[in-house]
Structure formats: C-alpha cells, structure tokens
Image 1: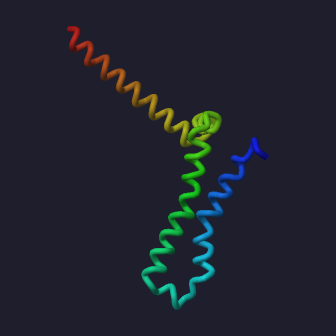
Image 2: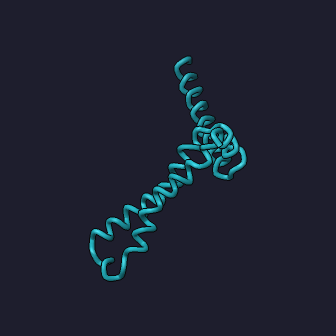
Image 3: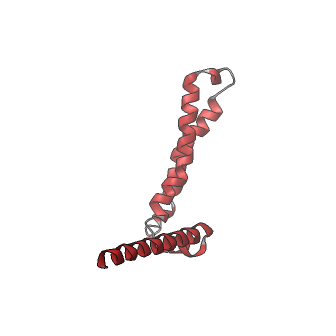
Length: 105
C-alpha cells in the first residue's frame, strides 16, 4: 500500500470536497433555503464539488507523460489539437520564410 498511496488521494480529496455539499443537502429544509446565506453556501459547495475533476487532472494526469501521450494519440480532442498546432506552425514557418525572402532580395 505504501507504493500505491496515490490511489487513495483522489478519494480523500473527493470526500473532503463533496462532504459539505452532502451535509448541506441533508440539513437544508424548504424554510431555510430562502436565505441568502444558504444560497451562497450552496454555490460554494457546488464549486467545490466540481473542483474535484480539475484537481485530479492537475495532480495526476497533467504531470504524467504516460497519460498525456495517451491523450494526444488516442483522444479525438488531442488529435484535433495536434492538427491545429501543426497547421499553425506550418503557417508561421511559411510567413517567416516569406519575410526572410523579402529581406534577402
């Protein structure tokens, strides 16, 4: 388990960030839902619960070369981004070569 403690970290983060939303949902009644404090707390807990995916991505997927290589090669979004990057750099190189030819002549 010491080698694979990273498997538990997303679960702990998920539990920590989703628990206020869960508790608020169980405690709140129709009468108390009319206050602005409850509305603000609901918004904050919604943001925290949605933050889980971003934190997991930033902690595990983004720094890992294995995950990122799989993303670039197998996902539809990754292939589109590679295509756009190649197309952009091709245009940039063509423009740079054209600018150099004007300077040389």
